[in-house]
Amino acid sequence: MSLDTRHRLGISNDNAIDPIALVQSKGCLVWTPEDVPEFDLSHLTQLTVSDPDSWDAVTIKEGDCTVIVVNNTRPAPRQANTIMHEWAHLELKHKPSRVDEFENGLLLLSDYPKELEDEANWLSGAMLAPRDGLVNLRKRGLDDDQIAEAFGISSQLATWRLRMTGIDRQFNRRN
Image (tube, rainbow, N blue to C red):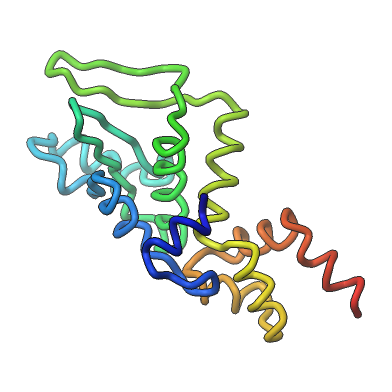
């Protein structure tokens, strides 16, 4: 799925993908808390100043419109992974354990079972750093931090992908 999507978008396997452009190409919107209409200033302050570490994103649905509200106080690589993770839940048609419905008809999707979280983690990681691209960059001698920079992801995600896809084991056998 990730390679097909990258191919359709004209993005090679060893280049960074723009998560916002991808999500928008699928008909979804990506907002920051400041973009949310009529959002109470006290709530905005709570989410972005008082307690910005308590959340990464929230997905809201109203009819056919889906909006991912991302915490823009987080570092850019974390935002990229968060956006792709939320998109993965949508793409895989995951059903959340909990859906909060508000009086105005907005649906807040949250609390996915661990199995679905794992699937979303895997797909988002594959979209951001596909195995073929990781192999190409490792062959060129790039370390984890350089690979992370090339893909616009965190070093932790790059290391996780290299480990989980077996690339580091594959390269260690050759050395």
